[in-house]
Length: 387
Image 1 (cartoon, rainbow, N blue to C red):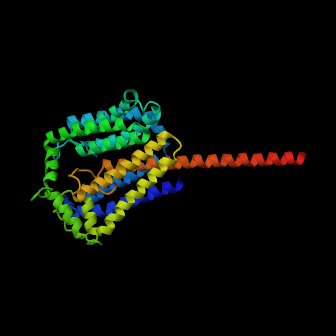
Image 2 (image 1 turned 30 degrees about the horizontal axis):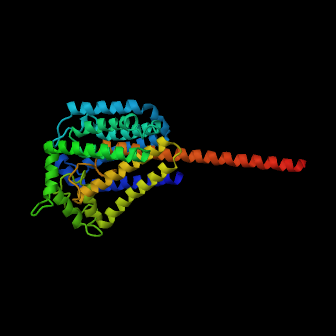
Image 3 (image 1 turned 90 degrees about the horizontal axis):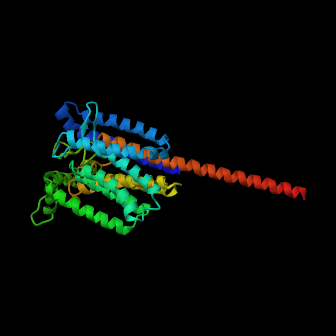
């Protein structure tokens, strides 16, 4: 478990370091144009990374079982924060997702995602005997999912809401819920969410544009077209760090949602694959931590955190390559951002603590067995001497 904790930290730190390099490259032209400083956005991102690493260190020392006590107040607080966002958040690009407190701007959906994972892990452990019952077990947990995902959905933030539902359903399935309950509930949510998504102008435009791109004469959106061009121009080895052409104001959100395209352009196919492999390593290490955890809460918490990171990573990569509609989701640890990278770092700190705590339990258990064996050996030896 100790080696798994080191692996998680190494993979995370590598992704953060790569993110710092690519954000500096991808944001320099925009920063110089908008803020008269090539390093404005990079400096802001660096500060948030340092804050994230600080909280990661703190979370790695806090016993993860401590979160059980506060999971319900925290999930209620997250719901209230999302409601406040709906009321006062300014509309940016068709949706209100951010709260500006002057000294910091936060996206409550990032907070709610981690809090929901913690609360679901707690409820799965608490109601493990009732989870097979649809009314008294499964639906009690699923209502929390619907509440958080629904509040995020109507911001509107369709992509984040959809992934939160997928992460939650996966946790419920791994936690022991019946497949038929998950299938029926998931299908109902998909149909309802799909209908509402087509009503909302912001999401309908993206979906219809994506569908039209598959037809005869259909064209990719400007952002997606520039992203694909950026990836394609990278070739096998890339054009080199700082030599991206698309980051020179050709590709919108080149330092944010579409940073994977700049990564592919500057580091090539090899660089893009290496980054994706880091996510796979992080996920596999997280799953092994979950498997070796001694309690259900630790198992579900480790699984939820690991799965949430890899699904966000591969959805972001799928968007950049044109496999999915444009979503607005960041690439974990690499995209420019505030709340996202801070709470991702906190998640990793929790994951590391699960590994360290269970490693200590294994060590104490082995020590206890060794002591018992020594005592048994001495007792046997004394009996033999008496004989």
